[in-house]
Length: 127
Image 1 (tube, rainbow, N blue to C red):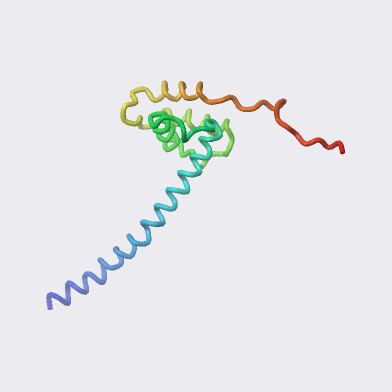
Image 2 (cartoon, rainbow, N blue to C red; image 1 turned 120 degrees about the vertical axis):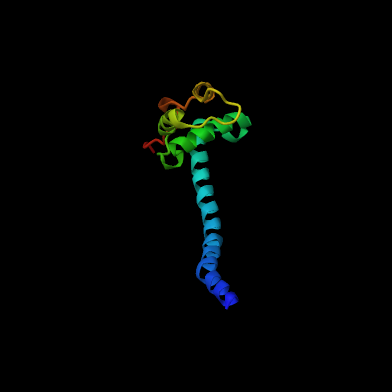
């Protein structure tokens, strides 16, 4: 009798929980990777060599991008900078960083300037 109750309890509660965990784990990893790649692509609009930055600088930018949900922002340089600026207020600084706002301002100064509109190549309508 006790074994049948344990089995019934397992089938009713344990088995569905295991199935839920087995399905949700890879889905969660896939969604996290997708959001991470989107945020990385937006950060590369401002810092084209983002992956070559030191670990500490990448950690600061990652903390800011998580705080402002950078992956949901428009894919423009201005939107990225505005989002990260908002993120300074709520971001949790990475280990070893005491003033995340100062670090962000330093990283903004290191970012290359965007190409100006006058220097961009525009195809001519003249044949």
